[in-house]
Length: 60
Image (cartoon, rainbow, N blue to C red):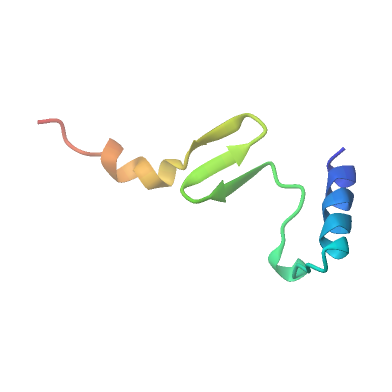
């Protein structure tokens, strides 16, 4: 299914004369970190590395 979606996206890009650099692309990933979030099939969550400092604060 992923391969079919990828094919459709690449075809639409080509039709619109938009191009991508394959050396900057990653395919078939389980999850992606984007703008401080982790996006996966399970949903979107905050990137744990971005909130680590807050979680380690000492309690007053």
